[in-house]
Structure formats: structure tokens, C-alpha cells
Image (cartoon, rainbow, N blue to C red; front, side, top):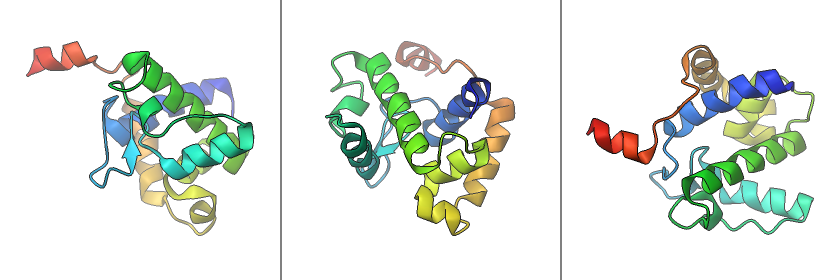
Length: 140
């Protein structure tokens, strides 16, 4: 995965997952933050890289000591580590996106194809700047 491709894929994943909302939480509470990170992903990353990331606290602006920026950074670096670990550093954007949605096994079984279509469309159209909380409040 080249840096240029990651720079296009990351905003698309964020757009598809949360529309850029750092406080996003799935309806079942199992995924949080801009990238909708799940506990199993964090446990996997912690185990492999010897980290001590706290799910969900480090992934939400209200509980991350650095607010929304800190939560977004932790989400993004966790995603990169997880995808390098599970999809491989040399995988293409489709494999990374489908692995993010369905896991390595799910991707191999053909899952995540509809998700990839959404991500691919977002890669063409997703904003590179997501509104801040203050900007979202202004729109309301």
C-alpha cells in the first residue's frame, strides 16, 4: 500500500464508517470512533505490537485525553497496524477495505464486496476535510 493510496483510502473509510464523526458509536455499541474500531481489532493490535490501547476510551473524544484529534489519531494508527497485520503491507485498497469490514477470513470468503463498492465511490468523492464539532453545530 503506497502512502498516496492510503491517503485516498483513509478519508473514504472514515466517510463510509462515520461520515467523519469522531464520537460515532454503532447501534450495538460494538464499534466506536471515526473508523468504527471494534474491541477485537484493538485486542489483536495490542497483542501483536505490545501496546496497551484502551477500548473504547482511547477511541472516543470524550474519554481520550487529547480529545477528538487524539481519538482520530489512535483510530487511524490502529487501523494501519491492524491492516498491515491482517491484510499485509502490500495488499491493494480493495483488500484493505474488505479486511477492515469483514476481517481477513471474511475477505477471503468473499465478504465485504458491497462495502468495497461504497469505499471505492467515496475514494472518488469523499471530502478530505470533515467538519469539526463546532462546524457541525453551526449547520444545525
